[in-house]
Length: 397
Image (cartoon, rainbow, N blue to C red; front, side):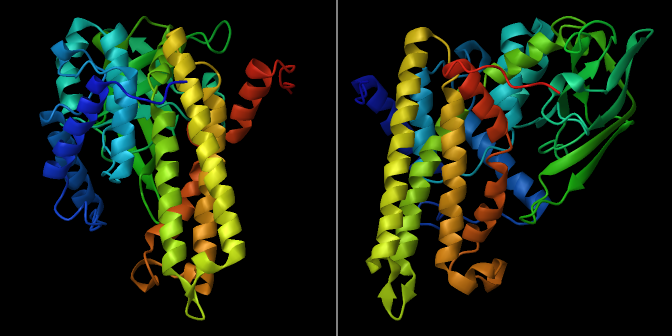
């Protein structure tokens, strides 16, 4: 592994740092990171942030320049994630559009679809959600029951989706629906681009454990799509869905670098919190725990770099990404739980009652999703066992 960056890559980093200093919201670099609590104000704040990113050329980083992207290399994308984690940059509201839908349309969409959607995805004018998960199908995507039936020149869609991020704000949905019920269950699926503002589409917000409302249920009752809204071919949605998922190529980098930042903040917390007037950082037991976290975050980073090197050499990511996802998710949960425990009884306080910063409590509750979203830890362990260690496949009941 070579940990050094080329002069060109360092130039890229410097350019990004300069842009962040000039464009992050006022006070952000000084720690005044205020994102509105109100859903509408929050959405407007994040739309404005994405518009800035797009105008600055920092959205659609790896996309071709002719479609408004930057044509960045994988290493430059990793540097981007490092720098965004370093400054705790605001999240991107249209993450589904930028990370998955846009790249998929660029790869297999029609010219009409590219012209209609790509620019609006980049600048945040249209927000996208992903209609994959359904009730009772768990992690088995091929078990979906939402149906699309051809009637004349229209496709009539009926069914329910769940755990859909940002559906309450979305203008469009990348939806998988069953269009044929014969053959194997991963066959007979079609991918549609569905208008979320039409009659027949209803979203119901789900209140999360951390009092956020980013998840939704979606109900499709005779909603309509047309042939021009199909991505790929009819009944070829399984291949299309795998294409879409393959574009999340730097998602693990995002988690890994934020883990490094989380450790630094945990150390700062141990310096701030005191017991009998003595900072926790002086306590040998706390120091031992922090040393363990330090070793594990460093190991996580080096493991990611090893995987990244293999990806660059082979031209595509391998199953080792499951080790990165598994490790960073579980370690993130542990560190946030420890941060709350350091606050003792004060760790129970919430919002304006919090002793220091309620973001620790908020992030701790949010961390329960780390080992569920993007493939559960159980799925990651199966992949590691079967595809890396060569163990027998999981028993199917």
